[in-house]
Length: 480
RNA sequence: CGGGGCGUGGCUCAGCCUGGUAGAGCGCAGCGUUCGGGUCGCUGAGGUCGGAGGUUCGAAUCCUCUCGCCCCGACCA
Image (cartoon, rainbow, N blue to C red; front, top):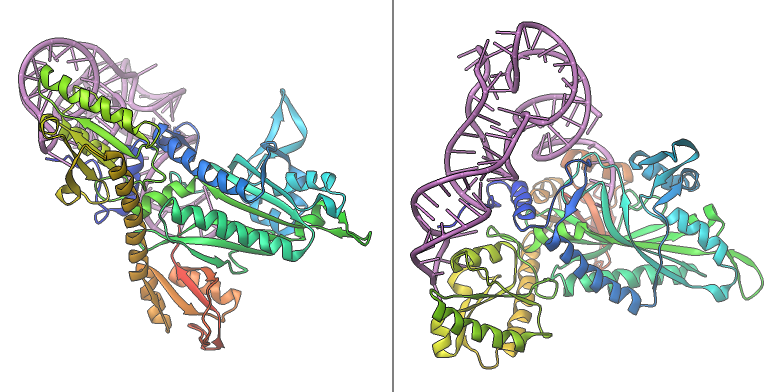
């Protein structure tokens, strides 16, 4: 008889999410530091897996890692008009140090465009210095009014890419390349989360950007979550920080810069995409532990026989898969099954006396709870079997998530349809409204234009609000 | 930041109205038992009742302030 440690999604989706975070040992509230969380080992291990996958892709596309200070002179933020307006309300400021008031306060970085811009201006002289392709892994702070673990915390971890280019085309190409080859590729192939690639509207774009691209994912409650953003900053920061270069014709030009980021918020997205009422579900390619081995025995004799097989199989798996053996002997197997399901391990191997006799093991997949996901296989060829199964689970999670999104996405033609569709998922609609119209819909429907998908229709249609003919199709949704 | 709710062993909560010096279940420790889907029993440890003031002979309980958490809204990766 299972204990109800996890609130069901149907009962209270929000509480379900908090229960997963807590009971899967991902993180706890920092308690004494407002709006912050403490990452526990499992939560941090997931972030490390994300870092690994993204870092590989970032480097493979020609970028180098750097690191800039946590503190930024307050005046830097003011240099770019839109930027300061966007961030001023949520920055934390350091006013005292060394027992004295500082002559100029520092802000704790909410993002690093400004301080990096300052140094880019010093480092870039000639077109030969371009493109400059940097990335940094860092923590940033934004004093959010309402926080939720991973999804919105006052301090969060992320990577922020910052690049400078000679031409607008180069900057645009970089911005889109990151979106496709780094972000969408990682999120879809490693995290098994389907995303919609799109452009943000003027209203939703990053403060100070020329334009912002994003990948948007659908959570199990039908709401949208921005999983990553990539900004073409135009020459806005180059002008504010005087980032210039001399071109082939000996003319001084402003650079075109970009910035792009993915944060620990992705952990929240991961939870809300795949997990179920039994607990966390991790896609195999991301899971810090892919396979858990649970030995089963009832006396010393059985234990030594079973453990001999466990040892032998462990030796075979070593270096090929990420696995652990749960040899705690104060807990029953049933308890362990439930616990590892709660923690999201994709695949479980059970080895008991019967398996020792028959030369078999029992396998249970996390993506198919209960008997449906259980099978008995020969110990022979187990490594290959596991690898195949893990890839099957990976594919299945993506397929399920995509099917869910497809089912919860509808094309809408009228205001009424839009209104009801955003209650349950994504609404695709033609849009020719103004920024004020967009605000009005947000006020009335609590839904925003998540993005203008990069895949646009050939055929024109009529704007869902104004009735004007347009070829622009957008996605409306309620968002995290 | 506005409205509402709540802070009592690690967790979930009772006690508060009607002040008299703290309880339960789960978890934890030890021993035994059990072990193929959350074993069972016995013994035991663990709390200055979020914090600071105040009222009182006496405060978990009443009053004031403060910090934090949850829900709803506005703002946001």
